[in-house]
Image (cartoon, rainbow, N blue to C red; front, side):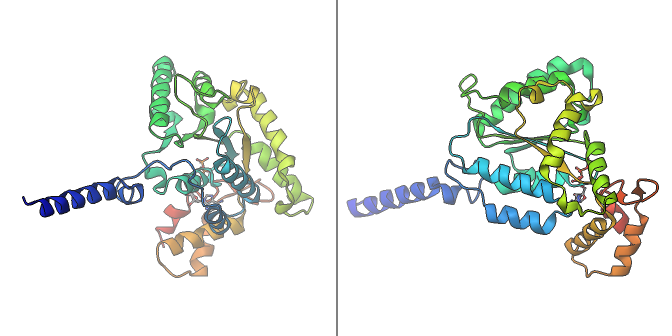
Length: 313
Ligand SMILES: Nc1ncnc2c1ncn2[C@@H]1O[C@H](COP(=O)(O)OP(=O)(O)OP(=O)(O)O)[C@@H](O)[C@H]1O
């Protein structure tokens, strides 16, 4: 090669390598862990919660404050630990998905988002020691690969207390554990524990003729943490997560009313690309069952069976 062509070839090759190693280009093809300084899109999170999450004014408020505050903090002292509580089908998994998507575009499909379901991943009490070991390695390995990993634990009330305690060190105020810092990770715990307490408060408001939007976080937060702590069946009972104040936010999910179920049905119809037929919306909503026996205000499965019921129409 003559010197000029050689120069051009080297120049082109190094430009290409430079381009390929340029994160924005490279991360267009391969999922990358968010870099330090990457800000969460608070407006987008608010918008999604405002438009897609129905009947959960408290959860909306807490989640927004917690997630945006945490991600804006360049140097958090501990990972963010959220405990989501409420009746079945009220949106706990749904919100976890929304949070995950706000942090990692691919949401639950992201390699940096990990979902554990107690009865699926840790079914046998006799294997607790083995599960503990696996969980430690799994969390450590994933946080080493991406500091802002998201871990979601569903059915927390069914998780063996030994495993809850195993997660504890990761949530604590340690700078590093064996050279790994967990302070930018997010842990989300989901459970039905406390659902009855939340319902009781909501019902009291309803019976006193007050709007559910008038329920304040302080009406529920303490009832919830104490109630869950003192309930032997809650799984979190006496768990050092609560004991040591390692949960940053208790997030209450209110039971859903008839009008919220209708909103879920409309959203589902729209997501299927169909036009809304109010007749169908009413038919599907009427198929749901409501409690308590007398007043029949709250859907006992929340919005959970809406999708399946809609398939009939
Ligand atoms: N508050 C809500 N607003 C909008 N959609 C909702 C809401 N609650 C539930 N849904 C819809 O119902 C589906 C089931 O809800 P989800 O899985 O989040 O319930 P959950 O609270 O996690 O229940 P469980 O405790 O039984 O696991 C969601 O995927 C979503 O489509």
